[in-house]
Image (cartoon, rainbow, N blue to C red; front, side, top):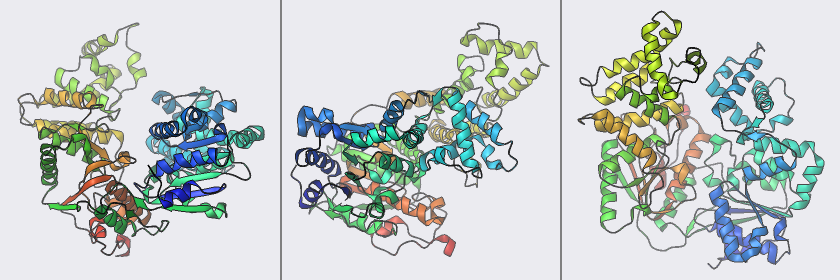
Length: 615
């Protein structure tokens, strides 16, 4: 590949702080790799003194491959790390010996102990006592603030975070989220360690810099020498991860921290047809919080965007399936086609529709929710009764869950797992007045009631009533975010509708869930169904984006918040610019009307959004 003028200027920039604002399809990875080569070949920086930082293992591997092809064996000396790997290397060199854990048991034990400690303070907010909310709060703090260095007794969230950390450390563990804060704390408290890293890396380059959170940016700044060679490559128009703490303001405001920052823009898009470039540019210009730049199409030819409207969501998805069938019949390989959805639920519905049309789908993000395993066990118990081994997997399920410690008090020594359900069934008969029998009866009652309904009621209705009784469905008419239980329940309920008319509805559903969990993941030459978030960094010849309308994409919650709406607009911008040949955008009739035509109108250059709060 030969560099264009914009790319060459960025590649050959002089030493110092360099900011490269790279639009989608503009050759960002190529420029980053060539910039590394220039530092070695033109500025005589030893390869072992160069650090490049990526967000994902896949991106790091791609960069390594490019450097290897360009430099040969010398590329092995260049440090190519993910941010987590960098933080971990700092922790290890700083003498941090805690083991990483993803164990829910360990994390829950540390959290509950922290909550018991913090609630001794009468002013501790009652909202924080909700475990799910508390763990989300801790994650948010760890992504955004160097909390370990703050002395803020009035910040209850930080006190909770510190108590949680102390409990995990007492058990000898830490989590992945702890790596960044711990590394930053070590660098602050150990000047010699900090100096070693500053002397080790003469140049630091960061890919996808718009996705840095404030703590990660602080960590990178800490290992920079006093006169840094610091290159950040990114695009604030593709900043779509604020929900995990990312803040593109570090990229936008870089000249304020480093006044001699050199800024270069890569505006030429080599990926998309001109119509997509034009429409996506009109769309993103409605955002106010952005670095002003335009995207220009390298290609002078290409198909127009296909906009379509449908009378219902079902007809919309059916139309998408028909169009995909036509594409495949014309010789298009399925793996060159993608459906990019705003949510996992929409992905699931799309996959079900395509499967009904016998279209092969790759939907790796569907039904990979770990809670789905419990739902699968619940379905098997529902089918075969309460004495099968899978019964052991569901006691922690729903509002009537039974702690393992309670069940263990009545189990014989060295009983096998497969024997436990039969033992409990016998215990319920022989000890009818036991408090544990009361718990078991209350737990099994909705399951046993559901088993009686199979010949009278459609499967989807049976499951809906069961999931509601177990408190596994979100409460209607609330803005509460769905939990992992709610999402898994929604996925399975959507699938169950297909089997209402089946001769063996429940076994068919169980088989479908198992197949979807194991059979589709990793298969090749299938239509890709992904959330837009998961599509970042990918590209496809033919891209379908369904349900682009207020209330769905963007969701209703974003219509009241300009900042959230701008992120949703960036998300749609990312979806549009994954396309190489033809883009299909669709929407459907909904009962709820909004006083704004949505992103489709903005693609035509129509006036932008009026916040509902101002109406």
